[in-house]
Length: 81
Image (tube, rainbow, N blue to C red; front, side):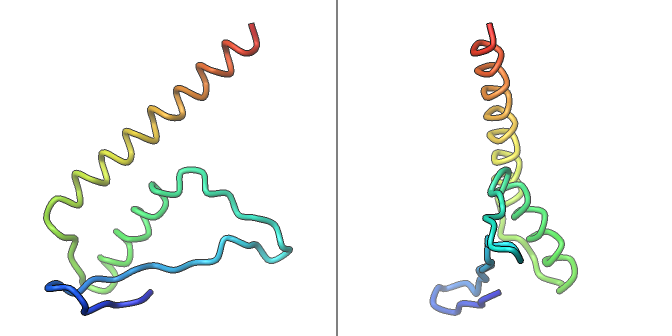
């Protein structure tokens, strides 16, 4: 985690490695949902707070990911016909 003070509000960035222990690429499937979960957990653990409106963005990301998964399923069904 990297903390920045270069804006009027302090903020943090998470930095992580997507290469597994055996050199394989770790999937980025649903990465926004997983990142949101980790951010919520870190926020609670360290007594931080989400900026106003972030909850709505998390919900938008969840819905967008859900829609994308449904489109993939629909496309797979059409391909298999």
